[in-house]
Image: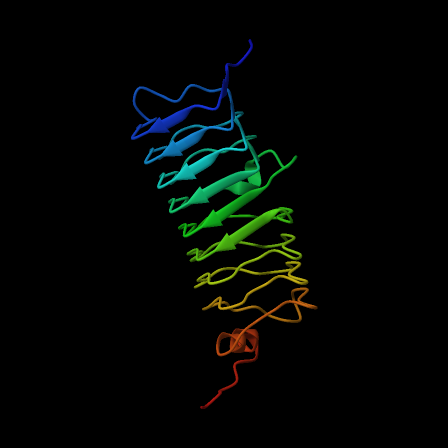
Length: 191
């Protein structure tokens, strides 16, 4: 069965939970103020699309292709990005909420996070080498055996990264939050 191919179409104020989202391949489409909350997006392909103020909370992403996408002011909470199609995964997240989302063992080399909330996000064994993570909030985020070499944590806050359990050579950090690299040592720092 051939899935539909939709190109250069704009979708605004759509709730794709009702009556349902048409599975297919979406290229160069724009989605504004749309709800994908708890929608099954398995096996859908998004290529070069923009999402503005959309809600993807708890959507299913099994084998979903996410290639060259831009998310702005979106809610992407509780998503299992590790179940997406890894081939060509590339996304830019600007001012998004990605709380409690997982990126377990993902290669995120073509991904950028700017001004995002990543509370409780799981980056275990992920490769974020050279990735921009500026102005993000990593409260309770998990970094375990994560490659963070040359990653840019400029003005990021509330992270707790164990230097001995993660690769951080050449990563950028800014004061005062760089002390998050010392959390594992349970030392007291006074000002």
